[in-house]
Image 1 (cartoon, rainbow, N blue to C red):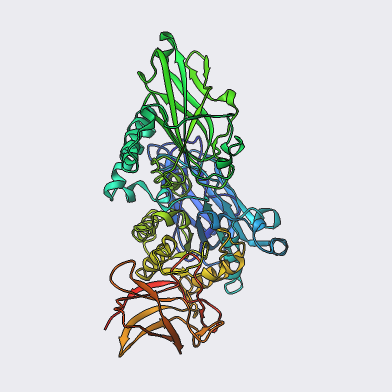
Image 2: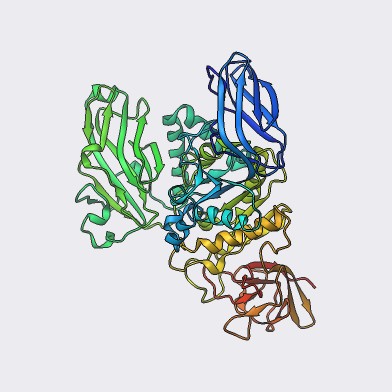
Length: 629
């Protein structure tokens, strides 16, 4: 996205700095700022491009394709004088690595980190780290200006382990400079990465975009509307409306801090929902003033009301809640603050700032502290809906701040490792992932840009009886989205997970498998992108034969002469049973019982026991498919 500021002399956008990597063998977009309508000249490696800034001082040029290894100064000059010169800009392959915490995990926190950092000095691997940020509308600049860095022990240690391992493996097969742009944020859902234009195409997305636009202009009005929407959602879960009355079965809060420290046995390890309420008294002069509700930091998600009016919501234990109050919300006499809190992640839940910082701040600088809090534990376990402007569970805000500013930087491919946070609402994930891939390709102006999806690894309980499973739904959505896209690759890593830790530390093998997919699709190397994968499932006489493609050599089953993890299912979701299956070359033969079978699925669960691999020790990925005749 083009920058917006007016510059006294020509400058490059923040994407272009010393040590930058420009995509080889393609025409590349270059942009920046200058005086309005100033004539601009861009030079690099003997190529010259001329353009002019528009009335806002934005300019853009295109440089012709260069082969790998070309390097030198990238220069912009204006007809009015001045300019900028960047050193050691090189032609190579540029990859964007994005997603949530497993893509974000740093090399220094991954398995065997000390040895990995001893092999971190690679001057032709360059790193561009985007800091976490969010914005209500697409941004033209990053909030914190990133810089291109040469790969060395210091720069690699905090960088994405999966992304760096991928690049290092690629250079073992293709000796070209590689630029890595890393833009991830742990805990985020896919919708917060999608653009406003993509979401506006969907009925629910259009409503969210309108509310987000209002929030950008008038936060108090947007919060009031959101409070009404939240209340509608809540009434579908419960017959109560605690923000309109006294809390039911309320008990006094012993001390204003996280509830694990209250000395209440039921709350010592409580991750769930809680209602908090406090009353305060105002005189007529105070009630007429502009004011802000200051709750300090809240862990994790809050929905807050004053006198029954929704005034604010936010997600994140690091965010200070300061909610502006609309005129007429406060009143003379007794007022009431009600806060619903959901502790999602295993940490201290509730109000976590000092009590002295929690209260009502008035326009004249005076402050009324909120004391005498009461609480009521909420038994409903369903995570509440989240406002569009909330970072992790909202819509577009992270992409607006962490992806939009780099568009349309020319890329070789995109690696996407995300989905854990969508497992509890997984049914539309395939459509969302397809939308994201199309949307980002459009933003980067590369309609055939290769996209590589890292499938979820094992995490959570093993399967005891066949059942529906959100984790498996995400994997299947990822598989189907990639299967339908000729320029996408799937990276199967179910065997690299940890059933007790959502953040498995073996990122070396993840990066290597990711590199294999990139080699197959982006470099056309003669390798299988995903290892063994589903091709077909059909009745053959009294048996069902599952055809597998992409395997190297015959399939094998570890620790058994049977292929473990197969299920046969009827027409309804709950009509599945474990099935006896054997391997025959590159097919699986399933022997059904006398029950009707219309579908076959494999490895369907969080951490199912599944034992089919090819001769390269690559696992057969999970799938669900209808059986043909």
